[in-house]
Length: 413
Image (cartoon, rainbow, N blue to C red; front, side):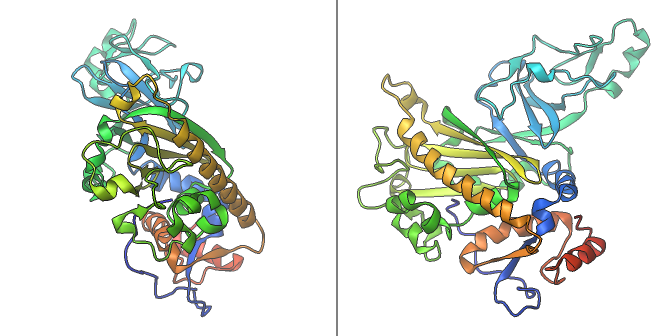
């Protein structure tokens, strides 16, 4: 559940698409079920925006690298000789061989830490073309005429930047604003948690049979919390009131005596140093589109990375971040947070899968968003802006309307 309000009601004038129903429409069915539409989202969103691919903590020495599969494209992020992170497609310029073969990859979505370490250079296993850690071709055996073309044969680059210890990659270099511009006010809002200093103490990984946007929309509202999360609502009573009257900006208070996301609402771990009183006693969170969800408690951070795989399948990785001083204690045990979150997560993924299954019905054309789901509507607006579609004013709520809209506004289905 996201714990920041998106702002005032911004329903489009075409809310309900001419039906008279005073609710904003969700994205149309095709956005959630069409593989053609998923491919278009890959090109226009997942490859051109800043996609979170892991944590930088394990990339300490020159040559340390992680591999990541971003919606079907394999990339490498490596620590360069000068200390900066560099990103490349996992692709040799000679014949297209994988530089890190799939059988040797331990992607960032599988386990924390580096996937491996290059010994000073990146060597293709096929014909031994060798590249520097900056991606420049160093040698191509028995091809001396290529010496003057090394720069032109550099590895295909990927933009890389970091914030809060998270590594972000943009597969279309220079395709949009900087990471700093994209993040906006988020770094200032969560500065006290010192995210870059935290370390991964546990990880959960889930395969969810739902579209990636269903997962994000579910995280971004608490209208569902009462029916879906009884244990969470017992810990955070305001969630039981549909999430509509919660003061999201000030953080969400726990029940009396509780201050963190565990079954008891307490823990033996000390709060992060430097937190304000609200940060020590309330729950905060952020959504960094397109694929990072951050939930902040006084003693731990649950960081979710969302890895779209197809129109109806998504991997979700939940990293539990703790202060290194707490992790160094001999009795450190993340189990209280991990167990509680795992229960809440599984409740979320089950309901997301039920939504996805329902959207395949021939009767489903689009859903409706209640006022307390306004933050979820932000996900649809984000997608619509990047795909240049305006489903709210087209009346595209029938199969015929969707087909017409596909022609008029490039909405594939």
